[in-house]
Length: 241
Image (cartoon, rainbow, N blue to C red; front, top):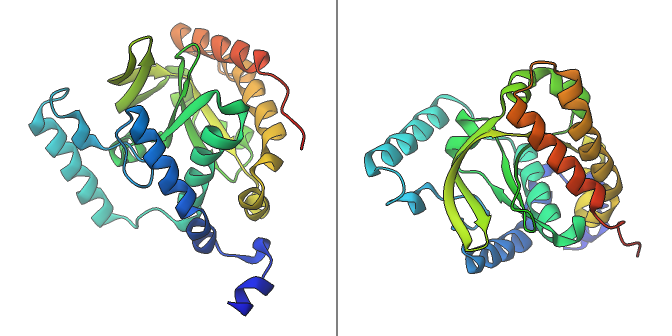
C-alpha cells in the first residue's frame, strides 16, 4: 500500500488506471440500468436485450461472429479500455453539464461497425457515434473519411424520445472523434474537468470541419453535423471550480 501511495497517477499503467475507475464505471452501469438502458457492468450495450426486437438467430449469429473474431485477434488493449471508460464516465458524469448520455456499444458494433460509443442528447434526442484515440483527431479523420462521409451504423442501439428509452438500430450517424493525448490520460483520471475545454472545442470544430473538408458527405449526415454543432454552441459555459 505504501508503494502505491508514493506513485504519482501519471506513472500508473493503463491497466491500473482502468482498475482505479472500475468502481465508478460499475456505479454508472447501475445508474444507466435504472434509467432503462440495458448494459453490462462495463456500461456496454447487451445484445441479449434485443430479443423480441431482432430475430434470435440473427443475434446468436452476431455473438458467434464476435467470439470467432476475438479468437483470431488479440482482445482490446488496456489503453483502448481506458479510453472508452474515460469517454463513458466523462460524458455521463463530468462534462457538458450532464446533458448527454454515453453508452459503450455492443462488441458487435465496436468490431464490425467501428463505433465505440453511442452518445445521445437528452434534450433533442439527437444521436451521434463516437470513436476514441490518443492521436490528433485531424490525422484520425483521414483514416475514417469514408465513415464520416457515409455516416456510421449502430445495430444494437438505444434511443430517447418523449416516451422514454427505446431499442433501435441506426444508420447515417455523424461520427465524432474524441481524442486524448496519451501523456494526459492519468491527469484526466484524476480530474475529468481538465479535458472538457479542449473536448468542447474539438467537437465543435469537427461538426463544422468534417462536412466542409469531406465533399462527398451524405446530405443527411451533413445535416446531422449541423444540428450537433448548434447543440454544442448552445451549451452553457463550463463551470470553473
